[in-house]
Length: 138
Image 1 (spheres, rainbow, N blue to C red):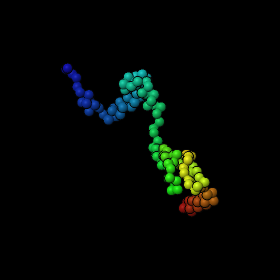
Image 2: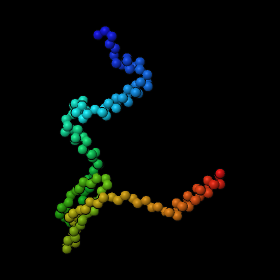
Image 3: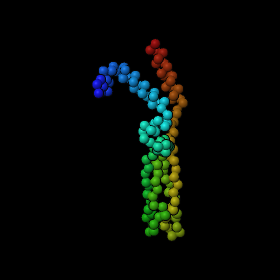
Image 4: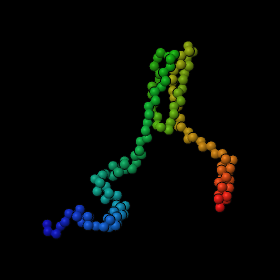
């Protein structure tokens, strides 16, 4: 076809400012597109888009195996459990009259955030020493 040029040649002749304006305009147009247009352009169904939006990223899990009693010969009723990174397990032990012990349950406990100790006296003395050093340098 006469007069037609590859788009790469046209883009190469554009100034960097023009390419930046074009990129910004493209982003605005994408934000204004309707959901139907986006689905059509990405060849996705409504259900696929809903799944992508509703599915939170999976948190890493770890499997913890129940401790085995050295005094009990039978199998424990709890073999292993799956915990997320912010959970800990507390094993529930049953102690039998013959001296044997076995794990019969568990409790999942959320890990507590470490408490940050705030020393008011230290903060005030630091603030006063900073204020004194600023006044002396002025």
